[in-house]
Length: 191
Image (cartoon, rainbow, N blue to C red; front, side):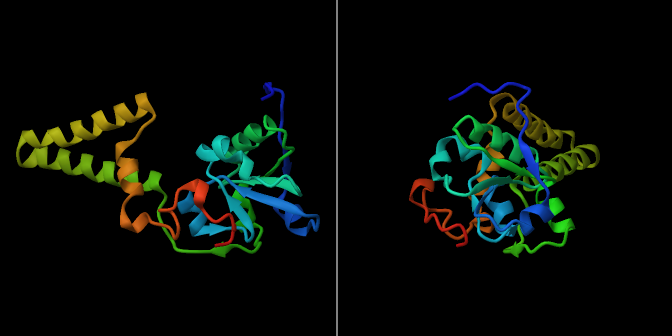
């Protein structure tokens, strides 16, 4: 794998230019499966950024590769990963936010909250509940926000979030064939 320098800049493509361009293209969406299920550009392939290094061989080498995420930041990181693997990707400028703002077609699916937002809600409600109960009922309830604080500290230090892992397994976060291991998933990007 080649070393990338800080001077490496991924070429960007505007949403309108991408939509108008008739050349064969591969649209690679690096958002989470939940974000992808909620909305995506038709005929795009979803390989989450955290799986891209291990699954880069699933990215077709035929056609112009455009990497997509919500705002463009994760897409840039994905593009850098792919640059190191011999691809010449472009990044969708402004991501799905800009695509939607431009009024371009979006394939919408089941509306779901991203795991990160679910974690924020659970932790926020837990801390708020613990503080209120600790202040008005019994100080022992302050153990609850302490528990959440310890969990967040562990997640920050280790890069592993137990709450996130549990929430991903929750029934409301199941997506079609998500129980199938990534290497055995059907590679049809539109299913």
